[in-house]
Amino acid sequence: MLGIQYLFLFAADFSDDRTLVNYYISVLNFNRGEERTTVKPIYDLSCEFMSQETKNLAEKRHAFLENFNIDLGEEV
Image (cartoon, rainbow, N blue to C red; front, side, top):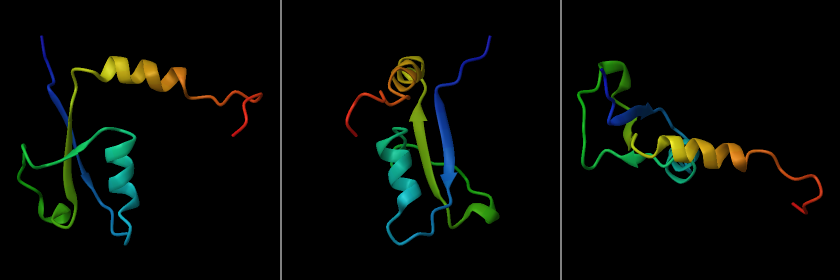
């Protein structure tokens, strides 16, 4: 049996407004690597390490799929 406690990524966001990093934080609930860190390969040195716990991923997936399609009768 195998368990995974965290997902992690290296965000390669070189934009001035940090669009990709902000998307990972606000929409996908990733955190910056303040509590957890990793050794970065040399090709990822300019990327930002981000992580997320996996314990609530099933609920987050369900909530995302429930709200994925916009109701065409609803005013946007």
